[in-house]
Amino acid sequence: MQPEPKINVLMVDDDPKNLLALEAILNSLGQNLVKAHSGAEALKCLLNQDFALILLDVQMPGMNGFETAKLIRERERSRYTPIIFLTAFTTNDDLMFKSYSLGAVDYLIKPISPEILKLKVTVFVDLFKKTEEVKRQAAQLKMQELQMLSQQHEKLIALGKLAAGLAHELNNPASAARRAAGHLCYKMQVLQSLALRCIAQHLMPTQLEQILQLKRDAIQHAATFKHLDSLALIDLEDELMGWLKSHGVADEWRLAPTLVTGGLNTLALEAINEQVGSDALNDVLTWLEATLSVASVVNVLEQSTDRIFEIVKAMKAYTYMDQALLQDVDLHEGLDNTLTILDYKLKSRNVIVIRQYSENLPCIPAYGSALNQVWTNLIDNAIDAVGEGGKIWVRTSKQKDDVIVEIADNGPGIPPEIQSRIFEPFFTTKDVGEGTGLGLEVAYRIVVGQHKGDIRCFSKPGDTRFQVILPSA
Image (cartoon, rainbow, N blue to C red):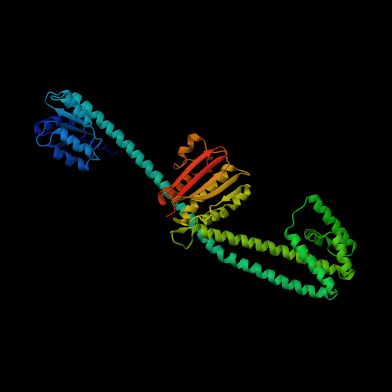
């Protein structure tokens, strides 16, 4: 075990005999006793060392004790170092007042009782040790906090890079799938036209036109089809299957569900039968069902690939991939991209988002990816706050030389007693495992530290608002 470090005690006196006497009294304390023979020498000692206590003689040639104490107090490092004045002369109230006004903790008259002096020095040595220990613990906690924040920041950066990388990797296949869906749609139309030529050999031009119009109406109906009650849907399909079977149409169980989706009922089928005749009925209905099925599949494929493409596009914009860190940022675009990224969570909880964007909001010089992280934290917290079926408002406005982004929700609010702590590191109101307590602290550092803006919170039940204020230039 390492020995406890010695504490510095500074003794200042122009008389070497007095310094020897002080040293003899205090040696038994086992501390580091530093001797100075003048005020100037004492000030030099205070430049590079910290002292638990200064024993300062009042009467010294050149610079007396009071003048030395004044200069000691003017220096930041020694401003709060305790000083005990020592004097061999009879004191009075004026000198006592002057000594205490200069920050002295005591005023002793020589000859000094060794036991009293040792006791007083011991008190300030112990106080210095405790103060240093508190400082050490505070520094250690601060270092741990900084390390955790640094780790969190590194994780967020890594996550951003991962998202950007995934967006880049998905961009090519998403674009290819989008093009392929469009090409497939065109080729299916070609195949449908070829199939229709075979059927058209048995139809008059007017009959063919009616069949084509029926197809167009059925496709439009299928695109906007709203699912009926299960029992009602089963009844319609059963009715159609009965009609198809009675008219000798094969695979009635496969055709009926698709024809119902296209808005066809027994009356429509009777009309088709009258137009084309029983000989062509089976081919026409089979062709019509195949056309509706293909149109439905292609529609789903186009919507899905468009959705993937939009998500990839939003992810690339969200991370500002391949763009400069500091640039003119469109806040509305960043907010929309963030909402796209969080769309899955909004829909899963049926949360309604109301955009209230200011017209002609200027672009601002900012770190776009970092600001998107702020919007993500604030909107994600709002989603958690409102729960199922809640509402979130995303507002923007211009005020003098600033722009304001406000994220509001109608959740239960933040209790008044903890509102002052929400931006503290590691403070969270969420259950264990659900929050790190770093989201709002990170948002605060990005807005205030990185962008020289401000972030404020106003909360009461049913109305919680986070306002982010950013300089527009």
